[in-house]
Image 1 (cartoon, one colour):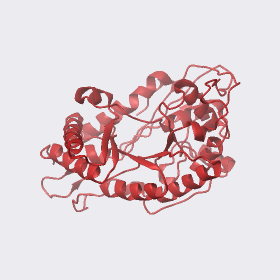
Image 2 (cartoon, helix red, strand yellow):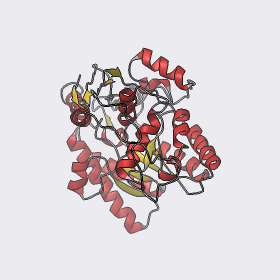
Image 3 (cartoon, one colour):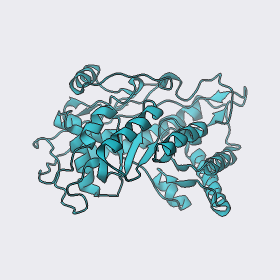
Image 4 (tube, helix red, strand yellow):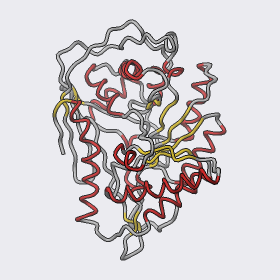
Length: 368
């Protein structure tokens, strides 16, 4: 699939295209399943997470089985949330990234910044060494301190991100604006999209941030925390602890985990985060909204591993490098050049195999 147009328009296509692609596959191709037990399963998962003290948001729209499934899941999670509150359980269901279902069920809409923001800024400016700083500056310039304050670290690798994160928020540069032209591509197994920008304006520069609360602070101080979306979570927690300590930041920061989570992983990541002095939260998606078995075999019905990403902006390729090679997207030559430019070091970990991200058809069905 390809989507082309102004960035302000094409950015809105990602979620419905992914959701409809998944729904079409499970409506017309893999039909060996039924809805029975989805609400109850979500309730049981929610209760286990609440009992374990996890703060959880539902992030499952893009790869859901369909809309009805997601509604059943949220109904189950809301039931768990109410019961958890009555019982005084330590965890919390904090909301959903689906704005419509948040309205329908009376729970908070919640989310974080996407890779696309950093990818688009880098492609427009054609300056990968300063793109992260520029993107963070615009974000703060728009929302201020304490609002949508979770920074995504892995678009061009966490080490490059932390170099920018340690810098002071700029105050005196002007902001340039421009229209954005985007495009996107998808194949039959993964939806990898392209969004491009077209602008005749000068290169983007960091915007003015004159808030008294922000003046003189670094990005690391201003942002509430960070999101981990690729690579080894244990290594990430250790890296962030060392980073904040080196920066002299004593405030307790948040880490949002959002990479292919299930219950066991939430518990595992919570433990290492608690021990390192962080507040962990969890964005759980496909594990909630596309957890089914084949009726005929009792084996797992595997969700589609589909994504949409920017592929071009301002006539230049838009790429994502991430913290493990399986999540690299975009023009291969640009990826190679940017890795070389940023001094990116390739790392692998046992959980980084994208080909079996959601399991296989022969996996036994277990509650994880």
